[in-house]
Image (cartoon, rainbow, N blue to C red; front, side, top):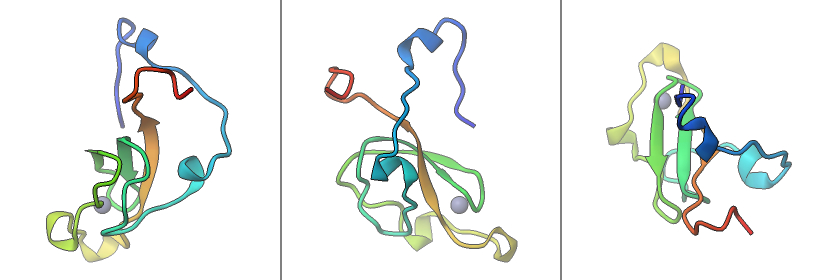
Length: 86
Ligand SMILES: [Zn+2]
């Protein structure tokens, strides 16, 4: 789980959004829609990924048979433009 301290919490903002990128799941080799932290629901590992890059290929993110499918979910979107997503 991504972590922050009481000193770094000020740099995070809670948003309410039904936008596709918050709801969608991404698989091996899909294109990263927005830069941020993504969590794999199969193994709970988190990665930082940049917009436009592919999610890790099969040989870079492997699961045991009981971890099931690789499913990436956006959990923290980074403000790469510094404009609060305006
Ligand atoms: Zn995984």
